Length: 173
View: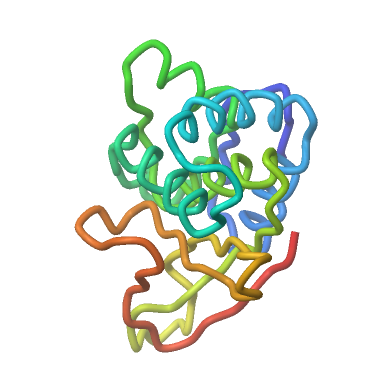
């Protein structure tokens, strides 16, 4: 069960909708958005004002520099709060997590500075279970009226990259 006061939610044998709903609760919580806003202000310090693609890319690049990818415990979905990731960054210069954690942070940072976001889940393989196995964020560029892909796990790929997928599903926030 998700508790916003707990820095990490352990969703044992979680399904994708439980994970999505947990992320939505985190990224719409005012306390979590406060921490996200503090990080967004740091990330955007040298980014030009009102250039939406540069702001979106600035958030993504900054998060990637402060993120180390590590898989969850087998059979358990760990979802960190923004406050937990904020404290890890302040203490250790990086936070550790997987695609749902980095997506949580990117989405919260964008929401905290006024961007519409949506969560995107994809299936990257032809698996028997027909399950989704990856999540990333899309941020909306209001000037160009287009959604931009922001995948914090694609370290060697730039802004608006996406991994090949078999199926895709969008969740508005």
